[in-house]
Length: 298
Image (cartoon, rainbow, N blue to C red):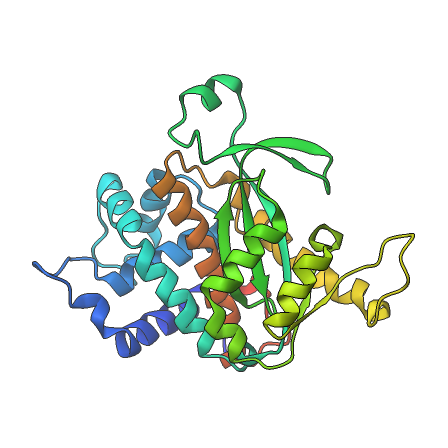
């Protein structure tokens, strides 16, 4: 079976049209660009690396009329996309559940910076002030002003949980809140193994996870005795680094262009949806590498 971006968009549209019919059952006159088409358009934008919506719509009008007979103007697309954030979150979960990887009892977690401004004047006048703050990225030895994307995924790269948070918050606090909000997902997976880095080390935190039936696997510190399962840890840890690299490289996470709370939220969600859609499609088409976007980025 040929695997390309058009095939993915068509398969995603059929999935939404068949299994998510309530997207179209909203009050008022039906939009000329359906909700299913809107989400497919958003996925294709992220896959092709168009960070500016005006430039993306110019490209779509010239090259994608065979898939989208009607395309809105720039303000209309922006407004529709921001309003679709709850639907995007629900579709991410729906696509994840439609794969065998969703039931995996091994989760990998990490956080990565989402810069929202590069200059002091931008920081002062930004609508994100108060939510976005200064943080430090130890992996790249740099400070940034923005947010952190917390991601929990399976070894296949399928996103299970994700959240945007103040970069000054303790990583354990944010992850604990994420697991508490979606406690039913943890309850569905007895003996869940959570793989994390040293930043999540804490006896109270590990005890809290244990009470939820979660075993934390992390690297040991130099002065600490070797922890169980550590020999396999380095190889598995590379998986989450690979997912973060996909977000930053092929999906342009750090070039999201959001300037408001809604704008940043929906642009990050758009990229999580794009990755989830690719993993979902790779599963159903039997691709060798589940999280590969290479077939869809051109």
